[in-house]
Length: 219
Image (tube, rainbow, N blue to C red; front, side, top):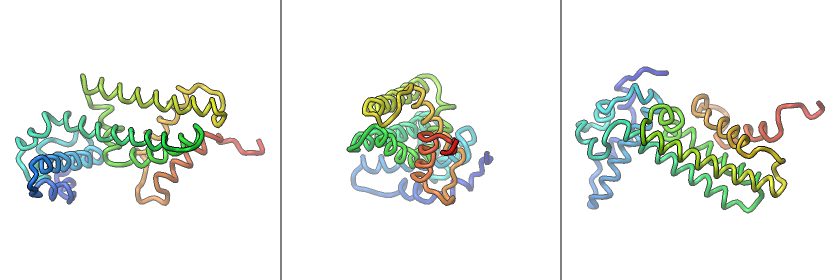
């Protein structure tokens, strides 16, 4: 893991611009500032780590005082929870994409994880999988855990549809959901955005391995 350096955050261009942008609509300006804070925080949490990032670091990178951040978040953990909520909203979009597919259960699984792979390797996705799951406490941890359980249950229902329509062999839907999420949730650890494959292609490879196994066809 990289150790925190203030200059790492200062290289981020968009959040500082958005924080200081002037608009006639007060609510819009407040939301721009909140999102600037969250964009900056997600970048830092996903690159240098939650524990290595302080509110002072975020404030300095945004060129504001630390008290200015308290208008948008109660604490650093509150910022992490807000980042997690954004990621969970994107997970919900993954399920919506899967539901919109006119196909069988396996088709829906493929679409879901192609979209999910993009989400999970984003800075917000990485902040959720690598930092929020380990560092949220109390009610925040409880809320996150329930959201992840709800997501697991929803994926199980898609798998059950696939078993019913014959596109997925008869199996324990809970175990398969666990295997799929476990495989994809590791992507933030090893994914290289400069590598030869994009997230969708990697999703296809992972699904092929899980669906067809690793044994040679002639064995």
